[in-house]
Image (cartoon, rainbow, N blue to C red):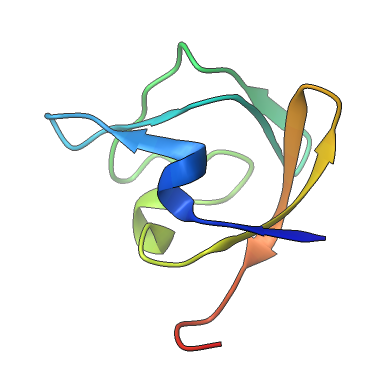
Length: 75
């Protein structure tokens, strides 16, 4: 498992939405760089707006980053 900075995986757009910078897999849901989503939208059951200050635990699987979880603040 590798630790990724949140904003090395996502870009925050001027309107507050998030866009993945690469393909991600969240609980079996795959989303690519062309998709933007805002607050209240859950991808694979995860509302990423709630985690944007935390680092991401993930695994590279080719061109897709499989997101496994998040690191707690200060850990």
